[in-house]
Length: 197
Image (cartoon, rainbow, N blue to C red; front, side, top):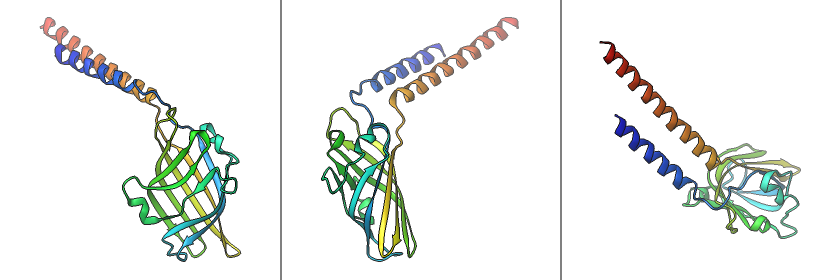
């Protein structure tokens, strides 16, 4: 039992050691993009989204650096896409920016709801950076388009959903310690019972 516990502890330490080798940070925060868009096809049976204008504002964390970026200034590019593109390997690019070392948001899964006057899409994907300072980071997306005077006005919120590696490693390490302590207590009780008999 003791040898098995030692092997388990060594394996856990090796795993923790391999987790700590990352050199880049995860991207943090949220961003909101407001603008004009058109459905590809007609609501409630649209097959995609075509963006006419977009501007980022109200961000937090690292993504606050996008505030003020816009398609008019050229530092934000909104990519038109079909809903079926999301199902392709690697998903589809929703937006890119030259800010923060160059970021790309790829959507890899989505759920879409449509009515005659609105479209809502909830999705998940990842942000990647051309900067070596950042790792690819999981992110969520909520895209809402509402028809007003024949135009679709939209808002898109993107937020990071990643669990930081140090927190995950700490959680895993404390679980290993708890298992080791429980095994020791059980062995001690067993030894005490055998000496009492």
